[in-house]
Amino acid sequence: MNASATAALTPLPDGVWSTLSAAREAYRAAVPAAYDEVLTEIAERARDTGSLGKTDVAALVVWKRLQAGTAWVVELMNLRDAEVRAVTSAAVDAVRDPQAPRGAAAREGRRALLPLPGCRNGDALASALLTAAAPDRMAVYDRRAQFGLERLGYQLTPAPGRYGRYMDLLDDLLVRSGPDADGWTARDVDTALYWLGRQATAAPGDAEEE
Image 1 (cartoon, rainbow, N blue to C red):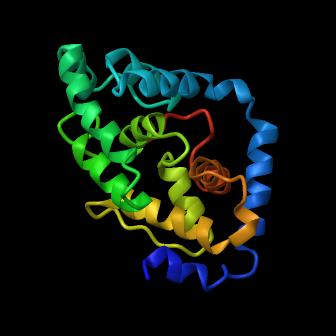
Image 2 (cartoon, rainbow, N blue to C red):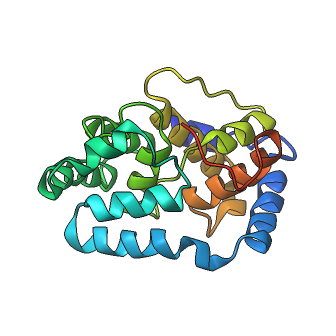
């Protein structure tokens, strides 16, 4: 029996899913649906092309509110679009692999992005790219989601492989919630975690990190 099947036998601790549900509703009430139009548009292009290009990466930097005045941005822009797509194509294939569990697919996708400037350290941009590649399966990681997990009693260290472990945790939350998670995606969980963790970080308009 795999880890997810085992986890399904043990319900979540009292209050965890109700906290997530309330946070998701609060996020939806506060953040206009239009905010995710960029992510949706890029996901649709990635579905058709099987890769993400420099324009897609640049748009996701803005969508994720990452710092653009850094050395890796210059390095990225100096690459040919075909080089970027060669890297992202492998990542897209990995996260869409129907035979791989969610966490394993996330680890392979994250590993495939390591050569791409902006994806060598930290998981914020890489997770945005992987979510655009598989929006119904992957989720965005950032420091606010990290704080949200900690508020629920989960620990996630910054050791290598963090994004895969993050997706394992989200998968665990979805599986162990049982019928309560019907209609939820991992992206729904990440927005709830983001909302839970926002008070423990800087103001919502500040640039993201990691």
